[in-house]
Image (cartoon, rainbow, N blue to C red; front, side, top):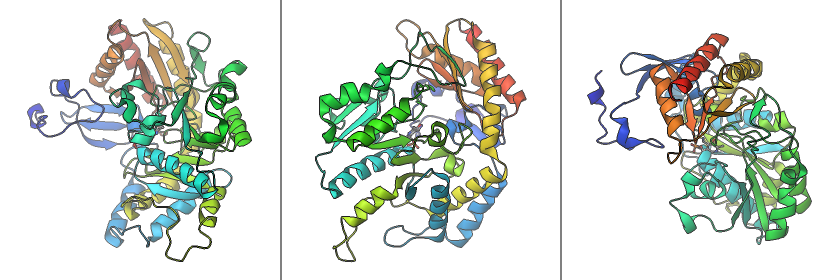
Length: 446
Ligand code: PMP
């Protein structure tokens, strides 16, 4: 196929420099295992699990077969006031994997929808308990919770927010970013140790500012993924949990990236031993094959919402929220097959085993290369951060991303970072290729 078959006449590409795409199109036409095939017949290693989705690798037959079978059985059914068998089974499997009393799954179709759903649940929960004044949210600088208005408002990546100004949700504040560029530039599968100042920021700075009794929820990614894999200091998430408990504030973990195995455990909540009140998921739940997201809530939240309607008539809906495609049977069939596959092939354990292989390779090949100012690895993901080009933020990382692509490796550029998060089936030989290609590209762009 020739390049000019892919003109930019009709497609407006997401999170992509559209004006330059035509000059250098990057188009996939097939995928299998660790690799894509491009429109011009080249192989590219998927070094980022296609944005943290494809944990089990591409083109997995058990998932594909489950989807085909579902299409031939029940293609679609509305989710409002009726349901389908696969949605029940998928919810049961997800609830069995999430920690503690996180048992009630609200399905949606993406991480962005999960973020806004969780914020709405928080407001509705407090109102149901007679605390409707709790309507303020606390996110974190450089946090990412998708692109819808709620998630964007609690998110803290400046480029995503800057066009929207005061149209963002007004009742939001942000915790400080969690990276110390001086003392924690190099993190190798460990948690950085910080002073009490950052651990207690919520208690000492934000809650006095807003009055804790007005705060509905704190929402964070356990590890800041989209910003470039920034790892929280030791004890940080535990402290958030304690402070939220003390003040009746809900804690939401956005596990859209960290969920389903990335850290070698089912969830980051397991890895850190901290249970949130809501856990948002998407991406790897279906191996990325069919869009799906969701929010897992505690029994306490669900019971409070149901209890508030205890005397209402039978036809009264307890929570006016949902998407046409919530619990879509084909997505649920894909999720069931994916979760079965993760278990059968012990892929979370495998991610945990390969984590130090990736971390070792990144640290040993990239430390000391030109412009490298930080390398951070934890779980099966690692980032290298470069100093920015004066006046051209993000350019060096973008150029390196392009260079790697040309040399057959898909890496993710995020700000000044380049991030790898390969499928859990990755072999050491893939990691060596990925990291060597990246090292060469960093040197070429010195
Ligand atoms: N939350 C987090 C933590 C994410 O990483 C992402 C996507 N990268 C989202 C939410 C948004 O997910 P989606 O793109 O599926 O809307």
